[in-house]
Image (cartoon, rainbow, N blue to C red):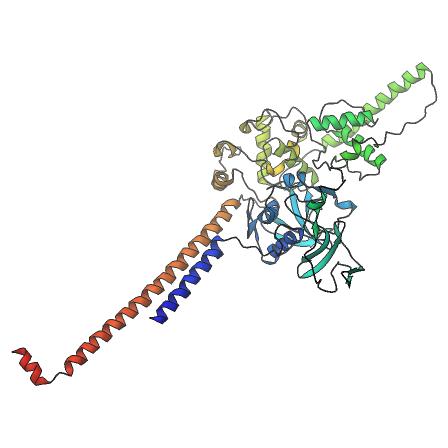
Length: 528
């Protein structure tokens, strides 16, 4: 009986542990909610071989933003994570020595590990990748401090088994410090030579916000193709400073890009034509005015003549450049470049492209272009030709009628895959020229995530229901748990059955033995 009780206790313990493994939330990070914790979480995802699943945000199956969300929560998608950041900066200007910063480029996010390394959930073929920031796929544009994560400002932080010492928001390197009477040496990676006697007195960046005089950083981004009220403000300010002479139309076109680059050049900023956190300088009283060249006085007739000639030359140059650009505008299946990335972003802002922008022109991009062409009265070729390109980047472009959008939001151009669709699933199932439905491969995904997934980076012609794959993995784990429970309970039932069977046989044996020990005379008399 004691053995049975012990066996039962062991089986119940196994059932409890298996339930935790299947249904519980495991966390390998040592410091939940911190920058070091996020960096360790990302490294664990890489070394554990987590799968890339579009829309996934659970341990083992994540997409790029899901890798961060599965640890820290907060905003779900890349652009909202960036726009709610507490601090941002250009990667080209250097990344602060901070574990667990976010990294951003159009349509993609990752996690900065430190020492020039990053981790990102890339695509279904590559999965979760770990490599240097300098060699990362298509490069990173911005680094940012996540609003959902606390970063050490001053003091010790443990990361990946080593200790680092932060001063002013960054860990120190190639130096030494006397802390609480002990001298610590820090190598080129920032690792301490000794384990600190007290690592619990660290202060965090969010604790500094109440007393810090640091200015609020504008974290939304506007570039060529963006539109809205903020773009209008940018144009007005550039015009006021003498950089912009075009129309104030709220559209971030080529003239606005040129003017913004001139401003960035004059202000000593990174010259990329993208309006991000540097708008703080643009709107400040210290913003530089455009340089004014001294011009000798000329007669009215000469001025008029030169003006006519300048206008003629300008039109000639503009038309020439425009002709050269427009004649060569053709983007089609299997193309892969930055321009395709911009096209996908623009289609996303108009509601036709609902997956992660990658810069690869796959079948889903082709179908999105066809849908745009159909809604805008163009020939449905699936190729971005001159006419399609012009209309796509104009303010006359028609939004996806299934989205019921009347007025574009100021951040629509940058929303990318963060935009979720509403309405019937059938509204988002596209068809080709022969009216063949693509629901065969996309309907199951659309019913769960209301998006249609394609394998852009893998250059595959198939559309895989990734969100369903994640659900299937979870379902498979649940079924495995039930099978395990059934096996254990079956084993327990067999054990009890064998025990009862043995006890019954033993009881019969004792009864027979008892009968055999009675004298035969007594047995005979008892018969009569």
